[in-house]
Length: 54
Image (cartoon, rainbow, N blue to C red):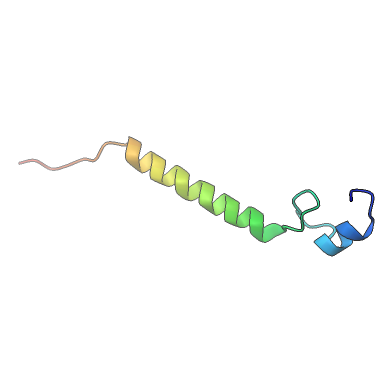
């Protein structure tokens, strides 16, 4: 499996492939987008909401 030279070529040699699985740049972009969205929502929950009470 790991000694097969045809696997990296099929997975896109030179791109950011996930360890011989064939998941390329789209996987990492989607993972980064999900992480940033989760971080933003977590920060939004932590920061108190300012209300104008008059």
